[in-house]
Image (cartoon, rainbow, N blue to C red; front, side, top):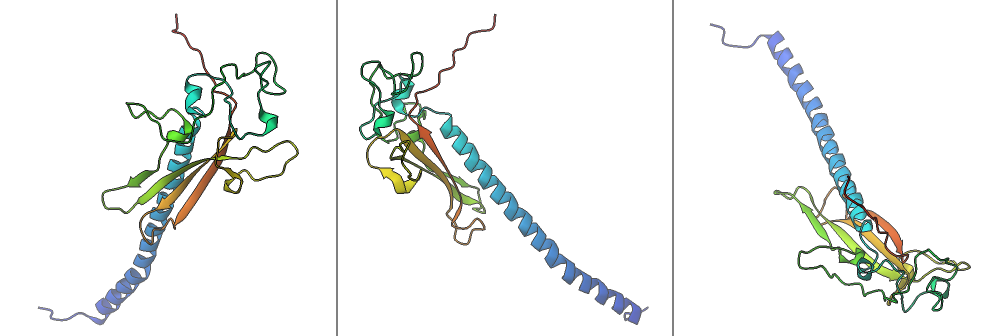
Length: 210
């Protein structure tokens, strides 16, 4: 019975072990990189989808009752509605109007009994987390009024132009914000901003196919 390895067998064993130790770390590194990329893609997709959901709702709570341009208390004069004609300055008959004289509501979460979010400021921060917290981040939503920008004005469509009272312009942001220290996404992975103007709510009429 043979009691020891031959020299050739030892050399082959050493070669195999050397290959294993040189290749396995690279495989693990690629696996981690692939997992990180997948997590970033997932977070980005969820943020974009959440923005799309917010944009599909009414500009204001009162737009669910009337499709008018709403009245605001801190808007630019160029956006005002003519009290005589009922249309925005520069508007024409048949365009969206403000006959009902409804005011824009304050920025509060005002869901109904079914927790239905029907306008842009009803949306809140939601958490994306799995059972072992390997993915743990928030989709952080912020909705503020910003000052209207006139034709001859140069301002920023962002938080630097914030208004404490209602204007014709809302600035909405969705930020992917991590909750786990050392998360591969970083502290603030992505920020998606967009603006929404007070132009009334589009209504689509439909009827049953005959």
